[in-house]
Image 1 (cartoon, rainbow over the protein chains, first blue to last red):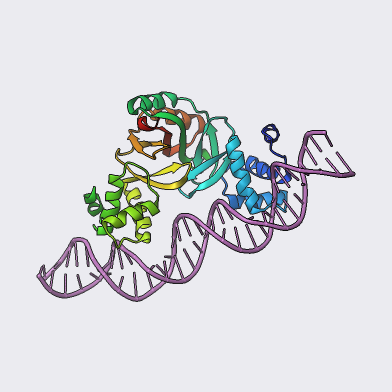
Image 2 (cartoon, chains in turn green, brown, red, yellow; image 1 turned 45 degrees about the vertical axis):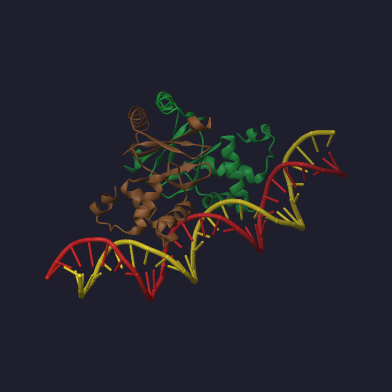
Length: 133
Length: 133
DNA sequence: GGCCAATTGAAAAGACTTTTCATTTGGAGC
DNA sequence: GCTCCAAATGAAAAGTCTTTTCAATTGGCC
């Protein structure tokens, strides 16, 4: 995944690796401030600005996904499933990915009915994970 | 719908009616600032604070839905379909509701596979409406 | 090893949202 | 209708979060 950065012509910096590592180690969704805190344990000079920029970069590259919870809409989690969606535990903030299938029919039906050309979709499930139930 | 406020024990104020009217007239999703602008044409003394509070109140009551677009996650649109979802035009910001069916199977399957107790879900489709294609 | 564009981060600026609190007001009860 | 009070309001202040700026640093091609 670190290679993905190089592939797309981005430099492989200690800061980017730290942010990637933080998101990979945590199974939860994290705010930029939390990523900064944890990231500094890996690379102490990490700055806030870089965290914001890196999270958005990783999102554009598809390595990271935004999570829109009740707590706010600026949290990020690693995207473990390419083109997938996620399921969020409302108690412990754990995030589990699941593949994006079974939605195509609904999307096509809605597109036909409304005349829209659907280009993207956002699906997020929330609930309680087995441990928190 | 205005009656819904009374039903839930909330007062029917000119400010709330103005916000409701703005959201009903526009078929688009609007930011709080836009709601304020338009709302002041209906009730000129409307204040920013009240717009924020009213939008959240209407959302809790289910009259209004939040739209999470690329432009940001704080936009609101009227919820025309109870328990439905929405489809957003990326060009003109028009919002169309569609019923929440066809998703249950996917949710149940995911719940079974992951052990999560799914409590809520967020689904948003984005694309181009017939007029903007 | 040198070079240069990409990257970084501290500080400043900016944008957005919430809190505070004195004033106003809807509507229940008479 | 009138009174009354808790709910609602809004201007200003405070707070939070995010982006921009710009000089310094650095990854990686040569």
